[in-house]
Image (cartoon, rainbow, N blue to C red; front, top):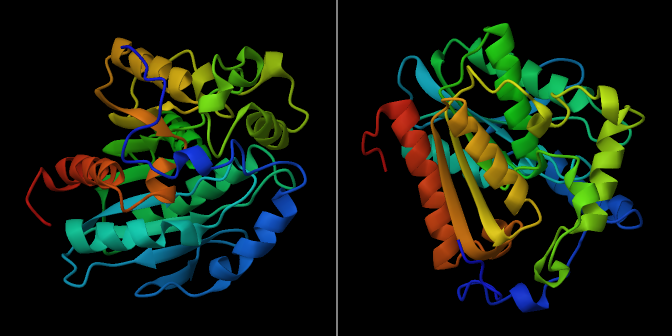
Length: 306
């Protein structure tokens, strides 16, 4: 596929956005600015405690069915920033449109809490969700964005190995999968927005801590997993102007080679997080619709629930 040299025509803010938002000096400030939204109770949802370390923001459909399907949402932020409130809008949409119980997990952040703690928090939330009396544990999907996509991919591996919960789908938006991308560089860094190589090195260094790259658990960086068999079907979406474009395409190809059904949606000229920054644009709305349709197919058999 020929890569465009410019941004998608719908993404008019792209030329004015920074190449990176997250850096060693900005992490603390970003956390302070987003802390209030994270503490605010979810509108039309509830705040639920999973264990001493983990809470979720839970959204239920207005007309809940007995044993409804469910979605676990994992927010992005390079393992460094963000909070579960970032998933409020998506989870409310899932509950309203798909009739599913949706939970956004508040996992602990690096560098204070490096791997495997954030992954353990997400797995605890998944098990808690599957045990809810109103949830059908056979119809649970995992959704993650950026670093949250990396955590969801790792969760899919955990589920395949443990067989405690068997997700029907993993939905990965521009997932952060491969720590080795930090050493490969990027051919045209001028096309990157919001998250670049410097941010990526900081994120991975914070998340992996002092782990030795030669003995690194594949659950820390799912692209390192040699065996991809037995995983849940996947939907992967990424833009061509995203630092994770190459690693995401490679992971999708490996999933298919392993016999895992994988839908790949490539958005020409889209940058990292484009659908969140310019959410009202047609290209962002189409990206959201594609995710919801994939979830609907997996959770409801494609029934028209919108």
